[in-house]
Structures are given as structure tokens and as C-alpha cells.
Image (cartoon, rainbow, N blue to C red; front, side, top):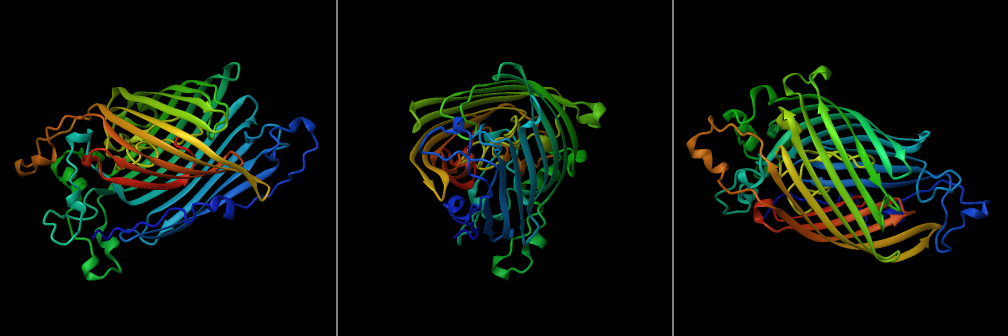
Length: 456
């Protein structure tokens, strides 16, 4: 029996309506603000708060909170907020943690959308499966500590340690009308990587529960064999600038019923910004489209994205990032809660990649609870992704006995499917529960994700 025990990231599925606290003035004197009689027009400040509570037998107890503040002013822009401030803080008893602040507003600077982030993320056991998808072996028996499994290596065999400081500022402005916009941004990544500190994670454990010493796991092997270049082993700093275009006709950002959101951006990490030998450029094109099937109830949402290197040399630690425009955050690589649900996080890592999502969303209940607008939605989805441009893997230092870790399996489309449940308050604060299953065991088995917001 697997000793990895995961309790939910958020303790109650309905926490948004039970725990959410609101501080606002709901009195509206302007008759022009009367919209749908079933909904209350929100004014002033509101905030939603949910606890971050979890337990993992390897990284310990997690405690913290997620809070999102929204300012609606006089309510004339509702459900679009004037300002959004998102704060998340959580720590585990063995050193993993999230300290994150994001700000988003179209009104701080007239005519320009401003989005900013300051995050410090420490991960004692970040997923690491190698490069180029199926061309890197994943064998779930290596991390299955069930009695009698002779192939077991460690529950954290496919893990590494990473500390990430990310600072960014993004700006968007109109070109023509409200739909066609320009974007520009600056971001700094300070990344430290290492092998998993087994001794730290074993502290306080009974002898039978301790993790075996494995020489750093797969990541440690890659380091020893020179698959990861020596000057990248401990990570490094990268500063990027980006510029691009956006076409956006969505009717509501948190969960559109119709419209298009298409973006194209070029990401530059030039030497002049201190990137040294690892100067590079890449581009990202993402198209999202939303179709109303039944007004206010049923919609179909799809997302397609292609991201690829244009020039230069990318360090391995910058490969697993998927770039999006504000207010979406730049995330880790393909796999996991924000890209391919049900597929292992960071399973699909290469210099170029494609991914797509198709999701049917049904808002089956709309009501007002404690003077707050609430809807509950069900969803069914399929996600897919693939490496289309390989990361150049140096295999000359790999022992012949370990070459099986780099199989001749041809990379192909990685697919998952699943269902979701969402609770939305005042159209903006959305608690999301998604369950996905991988179609191929080489991508894992399944994943349950509880967090905030629709995927796209």
C-alpha cells in the first residue's frame, strides 16, 4: 500500500460559500445598475478566503490560507472587478512552501491593464521525469512501496528540490476598440535546484517509514552522468522581456459563455539582461474559444497552444514553464492541475510543445445565498499535449546498464480525460475540483485537484 497520503488542498468543497467573508456596501442608488433580477450587483470590496490544509507523509503537514480581494466600486462594471489582490501563504512542516502575491487591474493606470506578481516557492519534492515525453522512462513501480514490489526504489525517485523566486510585471493596452490589444512585460526567475534532501524528509519518521537513500534519484543520476550540464546543476537566474498581441472578445473572464481569447507573444532572454551563455528567444501562441450551447447554462470551451524556441540555448530549469498572458500565471510544464489533468506534473518537457483542452461546462444551479450570487457547475473534459521539438540530451556519460531509462519509444500525443465541479461566488471567486485520468500508464494513473478558478 502506498504510504503517500494526500488530503485535499482545500478542506471543504463548499468552503467558498461557508468560509467566504464579505465586507462591502450592497446598496445601489443608480437604477442603471439593475441587471438580472436573479443576481445581486456587487459593490465596494469583497474577499473570499479558503484554508490550505493538507498532509503528505513525505513532506509533512501543510497549513495556510488563500485570500482573494475584489473591488467593484459602484458596481457599474460588475461582474468585472476594478482591482484584484490575490494572496496565498502555506508551509509544510518539512520546508515546502508558497508565498505568493498577485495584483490585477484595468483601472490603476487609465487605458492599461496592470498585472504584477511576487512569488517565492520552495518545493522539497518537485516532479522530475526527464525530457522529451515518452523518450524518458516512467515506471510507476519505482515509486510504489507496496510489499513484494522488487522494483521499488523510492517514493521520491522521480523528484528534485527547487526554490523559485519569481517577480514579474505585465502590461496590456488597447490598439483598436476593446478587443485588440498589445502586451509587454518583464520577469525575473531566480531558481535553485538540487537533489531531494532525504535526511531532512526522514526526520521524525519511524524506521519502517523512512525513505531509502537513492543517490539523488533520477535527477541525481542525470547530474552524475552529465545529462544536465555541470553549470546548470544548481539552477541559475533568468530575466526575460516579452511583447505580443491579444485579441479578446470574452463576455466574462472567470468563466466565459462565448467569445475568443487569442494571444501571441515573443519571449526574449538576452545576454544584456545578465543571461550570459543562456540567452534565448521563444514564442507562444494560445487560442481559446467559447461556445454557448444553452444560454446561461451550457457552454463548450476549448484551448490550443503551441510554444517553441526560436534561437539560443535554454537552460534545463527554464524548460518546464508554460507562458500565458495576465491574469493567468505562467505555470510549470505540461501535466498536472493547470495544463493536462490526470497526467503527471512536468511529465512532458521539451524545447517545443503543443497542448490542447476541450471542456463541456454546465451551470446547473444558480441562486443567491446570504446575499451572495452563487452558481454550481459540472464539467467533462479531455486534455492532450506533446513534445514537438526535443531538448538535446547528452547520453555519452550514461552507463550502458542504464540506457533503458532513455527508451526508443516515439513521443506521441499524451491524453487524459475527466470531470470537474465548480462553485462560483459573484462570478469571480471560483472553487474548482477536477479529477483526471491518464489514457497511457506511462503518464501516470490519475490526479485530483482542488483549487481556484476554471482552467482557462
